[in-house]
Image 1: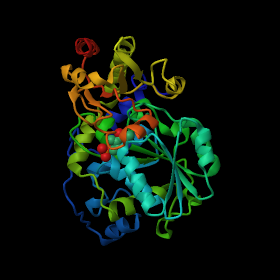
Image 2 (image 1 turned 135 degrees about the vertical axis):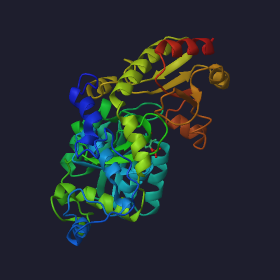
Image 3 (image 1 turned 90 degrees about the vertical axis):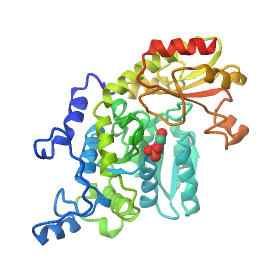
Image 4 (image 1 turned 30 degrees about the vertical axis):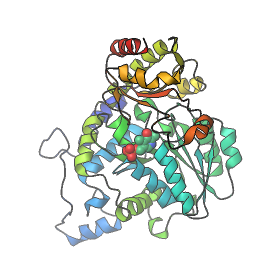
Length: 414
Ligand SMILES: *Cc1c(COP(=O)(O)O)cnc(C)c1O
């Protein structure tokens, strides 16, 4: 478990990360590099960039710029990984993992409780001949039972949205290690401020930079971090061209060439800059939001009009012990069930502070009734099967004072 406020290295390294590779013109902050092309005095250096022998060289911005590289180094430091690649969105990062590291005939085991658009991508790759099993990853046995000879990868999220289920993160890590499977952990909701998937032997870590890491809701971005734990020399899907140099880098090499160079899901320097600015306050925001969320969750839990509160740091949460063991805070994500689902619209309309909006991880608290919006397409039967109550509200807690949020819920619930 890491402590975001007490872990001096995490917070200190985070704010100083972009100065580690040289300061330009004395600028305190990393500049926004807008050049698409990069020129060299010696053609040997241009050749070196193409052949990967010139360290830190750039040739064309689709594969990265000094600004995106600085952000990638920051994420790598936060995740204590081997290296990272930034993408235009979290979805681009996830799609790149599936499309560049899996092939037709392969099998993927995914948690059943994943972000809706990730679930949609799983459907896309099934159409391309990749078999997918969706299991209740809260139990490692369910994951183990789904593994086949063709299984290559296991995909989970740290805290599921909106009902906050937590997979058996450590046991799945041990299982993947034993079976030689790529273990992908989407750390978006927790972020490296609360949890490092490397600690449970994750191979690849996904962060939607849009959410916790940027934190301001004003930029889209995603990242994949290789923890350095997976032995890519054993992975059959690495193309011969990327089987060069230290095998630790093979996975990222293929992801960058196929995912950025070929598929073009590149993060722009302008967006990377906005994300970097937000990321500087990551540990402070996450500690604060987690504290506020827990205070509000405790208050809501005892309210007679509330049926259930889904929040990992509440003792009533089914994976509470797991959350306390691995996460240094409960995050900003909460599910709240109204006892009387028929009051959903009027209660939400009476709330003054939370903004009625989809999306997560903003400075302001956001609220959305789940059944009539993000889970509407699923229909009532599928919602029931996924544990989505008709009266469920999803909250993304912002930077407001806990007392102000409590006062607002108090008047709205009547
Ligand atoms: C939002 C989200 C994504 C996708 O991120 P975008 O940056 O919006 O594309 C992926 N995973 C999780 C868990 C998310 O919440």
